[in-house]
Length: 55
Image (cartoon, rainbow, N blue to C red; front, top):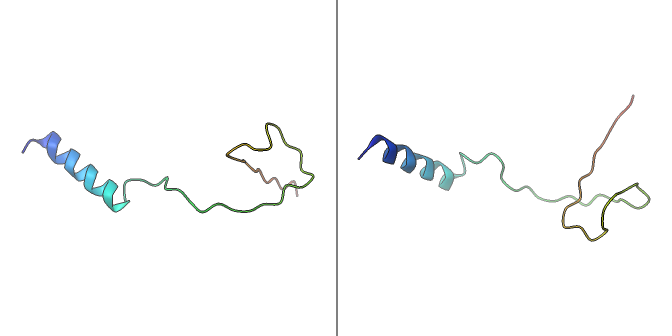
């Protein structure tokens, strides 16, 4: 087995175990946006919320 094939198999194994993929999907959160300023359509599939503390 070549060096390149060995690395590829190792990477595939790590991906299968979830070790090589730090950006796994996380659970969503429900955040009330009632009167908050916003941009874009209301039915967008993704909402990005930014929290800023000026204290």
